[in-house]
Every structure is written in structure tokens, then in C-alpha cells.
Amino acid sequence: MYTQAMDSQPKEERERKPVRSVEEVELERRFDAKIDAGDFIEAKDWMPDHYRKTLLRQISQHAHSEIVGMLPEGNWITRAPTLKRKAILLAKVQDEGGHGLYLYAAAETLGTSRDQMVDALHAGKAKYSSIFNYPTLTWADIGTIGWLVDGAAIMNQVPICRCSYAPYARAMIRICREESFHQRQGFDSLLTMMKKGTDAQKAMVQDAVNRWWWPSIMMFGPPDDQSPNSAQGMRWGIKRVSNDTLRQRFIDATVEQAKILGVTLPDPDLKWNPDREAHDFGAIDWDEFKRVIAGDGPCNRERLAARQQAWDDGAWVRDAALAYARKQQTKQEAA
Amino acid sequence: MNSKQNAANQSAMDEWPLWEVFVRSKSGLDHKHCGSLHAADPQMAIQLARDVYTRRLEGCSVWVVRSDQIVASDPADKDMYFDPMEDKVYRHPTFYKLPPEVDHM
Image 1 (cartoon, each protein chain N blue to C red):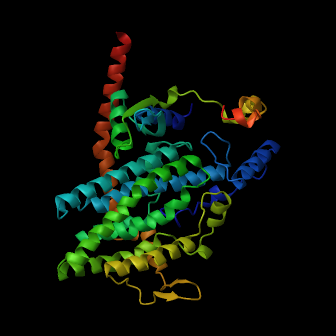
Image 2: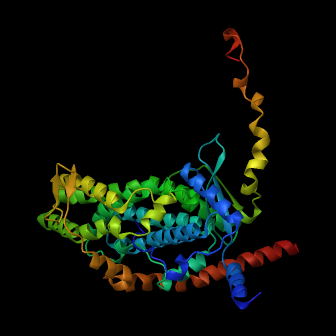
Image 3: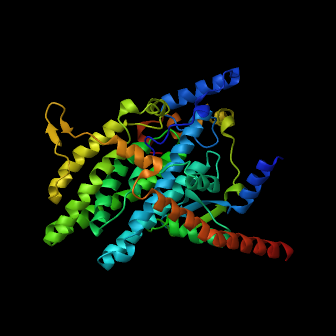
């Protein structure tokens, strides 16, 4: 989900080599058999170039999403209403830094470096999830992000725990274990405001839900019939469940949760359909999604600027640590 | 080496090296590999490993090893390398059929 609709590749990457050796054809046949058997691919195994590039793009963008995702929430750390909520938010944001690390590590196994991936992000060549380009305007946004955004993330990430590329799958298992508290703390925060809050606080929660609902269901990416790369992803065991299926599951689960909270979801067309045994929902504004992905969302420039600045400001730390380590090494060798 | 490769090599040398992290979750258990991280030196590696991989009390002991120190078997040779083990079923206790009175052995 963090990479839906962002995997459209430049044309030259999509053109395959016209002539392949007998050896390569055999390697690919064995690779396909492994995938079909539900076997895992590890870092040093042979893999098609396209498989490697697809995963590299997806995993690195997933990593960027975690790191950029720390920003909208980091915004409220100094303004959390109680010490308990502050500690919880700190722990969540800390987790997200860690998740970025697991994913960068998985991406690096495919033959790239951290510096290269960060450069691509700063240059706008690598994307991150659309959802993080929206602002956190009130404290209720933090709870809503936990409930809806982390909820959507979990829905997407659980199937990836069975991704054919094992380093990605293992990272995902670690992430899923940690992610469930993220959703629960958000729901808990909203429940507190809805059950024990003032009218103004309840209105604040409803307002946050109104703003985050549609962007959250956009996180699952475009409809299946507009996702040309999904088929290849499924063939290779990278993508296990389609965008539309995940989106439907999320909506059906969330409608029930909204009832417990006592908030309404801002979709007049949201209705249970007994024939489909699922909720029908209204039309998604895919133009908004495309604009935000392309860089024209409310916070795109701010997010990227923050990341660039963090990188620049941290350069002396990275350099100093390395210089110190090398000096110590030289001293040790001389002794 | 062309200039692009030079730049890449220099860039690689300017990055903190990669370390593999092993955590023993409970007294009595093995250390298990749980992931990797970049750090400038061993002290930093251990500290960061604790910060990142034991946030939920997952460990009572942490090892870090520089990734380039790890020697691994070649996955391409997997079949050939481990094949000798495949037909030596007599290594398994279940190969031996014993009278029921002594089968608890």
C-alpha cells in the first residue's frame, strides 16, 4: 500500500533484453518454479533483473514512507495533552524509525546503498505513501492516524509477510508485530475523547475523521483495473492480495469500529450490500490521489524539505563518527 | 575505473559499515539473528542494536558482527553442498524399528 500506483517505471526500464542465453532462460525457469512452489528467494539467489528492480523500488519507497511518516506525528509530540499520550506518541514514532531501518536493510540486500536511496527520495525520484502529505491539524488527527492510517497499513502489510523475497517478508513480520499497538493506541485515544470528552472534543474527532477517511482508503492504490503492474507482482509472489480486495476488507472492518466510537464516516454512499456481503462505498477522487502523488498535495514540499534538512544537518555527525572510528582504528593498529 | 565508479567507491567508503545483530531473548536460549544496522564502530553498533532491536525487552544479550566478517555457504551450491545429507536416513532415530517394549529409547 505504501507503494501502490508509484511503481510506474520509465519506458527504457520496461524493455527487456531481446536475446537471452540458454543459461539465463533455465535460471528463470527454476526461479519461476521456486515462486510457484511457494519457496522463498534470499539475497544471494539468482533473480530476474525486473524482479530485483521492482522490489528495490517497492521496498525503498516503503522505507521512505516510514521515515517521512514520522513527520506528521512528530508535529504533536511537544503538544500531546498528557504525559502518558506524549510517551505513547514518542514510542510510536520511535518504532517508525526502526521500521524504516528494517526496510532500508532489506532494500540494501538487493544492491543499493542508503545514500543512493536517500538521494533518490530528496531528488523526487523515489516516492513515499501519499497519506503523509496531509497535515495534522489537531490532536484528534493523531488518534485518527493511528486508527485509520495504521489500520490500512496493517491490512496491507500482513499479506506481505508471505512475500517471496524473504528479507522483505522477515522485515514485514517484525513490523506487523510492532504495528498493532499503533492502531490500538489511536483507537484508545479517540475512544477517550468520544466517551469522556467535551462536545468540542467530540466535534474535533469527527472533523479529523472527515479529513482522513478518503485519503486513508486511497492508500490501497488505484482500482485493480487501473493497476497494470499488479499482475506481474502477483505472478512473482510480491503482491498477494489485490488493491480492491484489501480496500474492501479495510472498509468493512472500519465501519464496525466507527460505530463503537460513535463517529460517522464521511461517505453518504456507504451502505451494507447483502448481495455482495460487503459495504458499497462512494466514488474515490482519483484526481486528488494523482495530484498528491505527483507532488501537489498540502505538505509535499514541507515533508521533503524537512527530510533534506535533517540529512544536511546530520552530515557532521555522520562524518565525525566515521572520522573518530578511523582514528581509533589507526591507533589500535599502531599499538 | 571511470569517474562514476570512483564516486561510488568513495561514497561507499563514506558510509558507516553494516553490522548483523544477534539477540538472546531469554537466559538459556541461543542468540538469534534479528536484523542489521549501520554504525561507525563496535561501541555504536552495540548501542544502536539495543536501541533498535530490544525496545520490547526482546533481549538479555546482544551480539553485533560486521557483515563483511560473515562467511556463508554459496546458495548456488546448495544442492551439491547439502546433498550428502539427503540419503543418510540412518542418522534419524525413526529409521530403526524396535519392539514396542523398548521403543521409548
